[in-house]
Length: 85
Image (cartoon, rainbow, N blue to C red; front, side, top):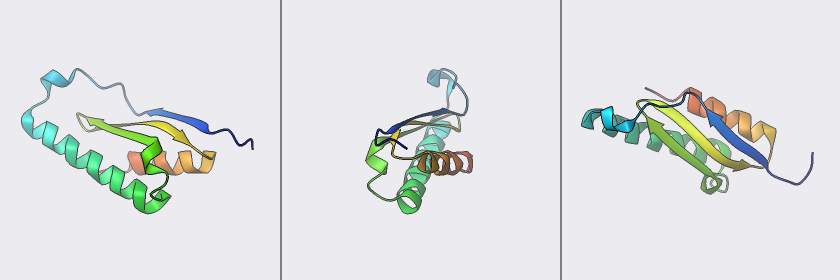
């Protein structure tokens, strides 16, 4: 595998407009984002987390950024998919 980073752009679902989300839903999204970031840090290591952006809207988690291997990408996707909603 080349030393170039593999791009990570994983969309579980294209989220709807955020203006329709209730304040409770926004808080839940913040909790989901925090939980995913924490799990990424513990499972993939702190050096990987700054390279990944985590967003949650209406319970849908979106990851973007760069990782060093396809294995790391797969692990990040699994973490996002298993996040509580």
